[in-house]
Image (tube, rainbow, N blue to C red):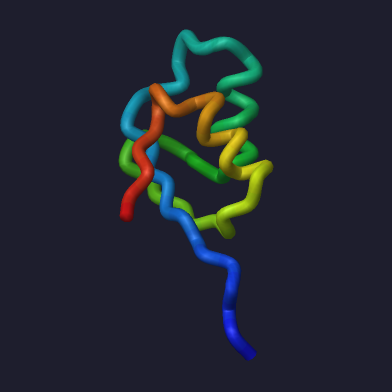
Length: 62
């Protein structure tokens, strides 16, 4: 079986303190628990939308 779905690693680089509730919820939904935490997700349109919403708080790790 060939894995066509690529994965993407996301690292939180800024705090969610003093951010709007929707941005905090997005970080929680991505599974990020704090600065320096890295998670890996399948690259789907919904994940890409979440990344776009909090792009100023995270970094995509290659």
